[in-house]
Length: 188
Image (cartoon, rainbow, N blue to C red; front, side, top):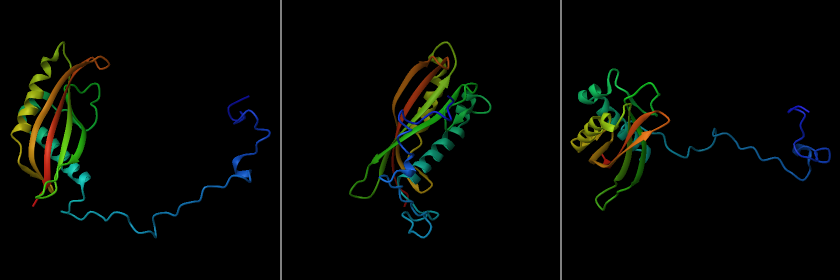
């Protein structure tokens, strides 16, 4: 018996297909979005829409900060390996902008958000020493960066929280993980 003629249940000869069973109704079809009111308004240029746009502003600023630094580019080689996704196996050393977590940081004066961004650094070698110049440079860039305005977001504080180093056996490389904290508010 091949896969096409294989019965769906052991007693299929007794059970008609679902579409023929009178005790089961078909699920109602939902109308398309056309003709219904839009649940979220469209974003106009220069207008903050919430957490997603702040994350986008922060991500673009962080990517520009890292890729615009000559010392970091020299450490990473040519072309500089700064990615939004885990780096391909052949592109080491590399910096990967990872997860960004958001939480509320509003005060009586106005709205604000706190973000924890993860940056992963990968390098080949026999020990972790190849990671240290790259992670130290990223930490120095972040420490001297705030306050700054990125898009419609003002980054009030940028600081490094932790740095962890480990060996990635699957890639036969070392990985450094930096966790950075950003406090942001809407730009005036």
